[in-house]
Image (cartoon, rainbow, N blue to C red; front, top):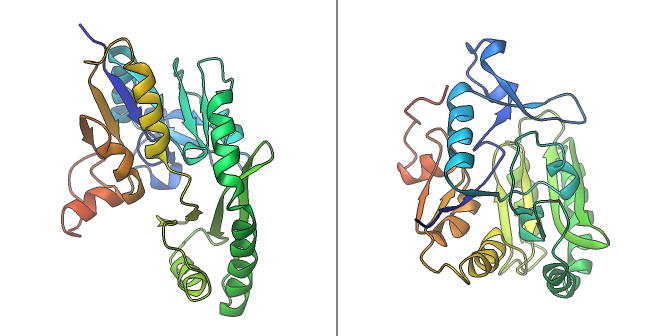
Length: 257
């Protein structure tokens, strides 16, 4: 029997911060999933933990995350295969070693966008200051390669981040770029970078000797949809951004505790 290949997003799919967990969940019902440098660790509910255990036992489970290589190193879930990090910029093997061939491709393709990324960061910071938005921002880099830009509100809300994106759209031609807003996260991804591109590359590699292996995908945000669509089957958490969009914007329903 062909073992399934499972591509799964991490944050807000398999785990979340304590603030996003069910408010009535007792502490002993939550499992540490990832450590944070600011103390806001990520946790799994019992259902999420059971789901993760099932995924790992059943298929070759591969994380697909916006987390940088450093942030991914703080994830406590014992994945035992590849990992796709930094929105597809890096593919790691089971030992955490980057795929050199993929790194060369990304260095070449992302290098063409380095100056634009730096300009977007500077203009976005200026727009935030002009609008009175208290935000922090940075470019996620892997080795010496700039991958994408991130903006977050310091109050943890994120509702004003679209103002920054709107201001940038008046100055830059963002055709082909991915502008991703979900909660307190605004990401600006150049055309060369996508989770789907890395998933397709790895899927082709893993099916070279077993072309009938089924693929499953799981993710929570609208920007996960392209990589999910590259899989044979896919699913989303009930209370996610993607679930709300598919449900026509209706209030989320279902249980996730």
